[in-house]
Image 1: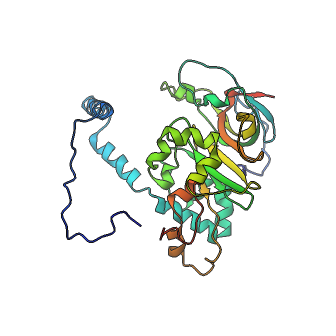
Image 2: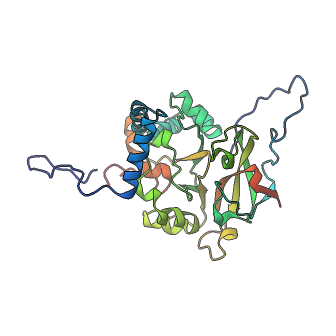
Image 3: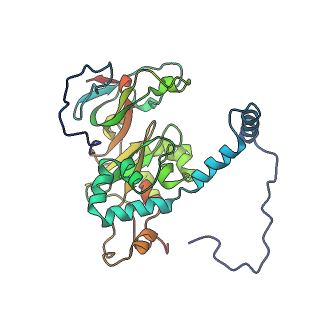
Length: 213
Length: 115
């Protein structure tokens, strides 16, 4: 599961900030200090917002997906109005975005991207992976989605429509992946463990070996 | 794509709506994304300018125009965003994939024209 699957009997290099800060790091620090100094925001507000974002992780998204798989009333609500259904579960939309949940089916495979920047369903998934923010993914996901998917190991048959949702303003997207066969007797916890971040972006399906891979 | 459910009851009184309160477009409408390049802040990617598509859904509620919001003006003429569908083959003549493949994106009302 992690690249760091070993015990800790050996020493590690100290985690340290080495090297001079980059241009944008200096800019961010200067801007932050100036805003605090001028009284526009307080340091505690910044910390609070970091805590808000840190509390949002793919585990939250996985809970939503599994509830949709196992509760048909919730599933219908989620597909009709993603944000309202998530708010019912106590998930707030601190950034005032809308949420459309895109259901993968036998005939449609959904993929999400933000070509302009890095719009991402942060309220339900937390911070996006780095590759999601990089230009190659952002450009290629809308130009050649099938090639991008193939690089993730996902081959979509020609008779399945690939539907790319480009998130650019006030709407965020969450992919509702298909529930894999053979999971009928799984507990909720076991199902949630199968649902990965990448599956909710739409670059991979949910498979039984999601966790072991 | 289902729309946000609206109250099923008919309004008790007829009221006059302000400009922009009622959505200009409906699901199924043929549209074209405006082909213009204003200076400032906007959220319509270049690759969509001038492309024809179909309205899939109205995004409710109406929202402030982000081109104004980008400059700190958070009040004024609210309009709807629309989720529109454009075939990939209409965007990229050399598109490799099924002719069914499509792009979906939300576009602010001021950027849509009837096609």
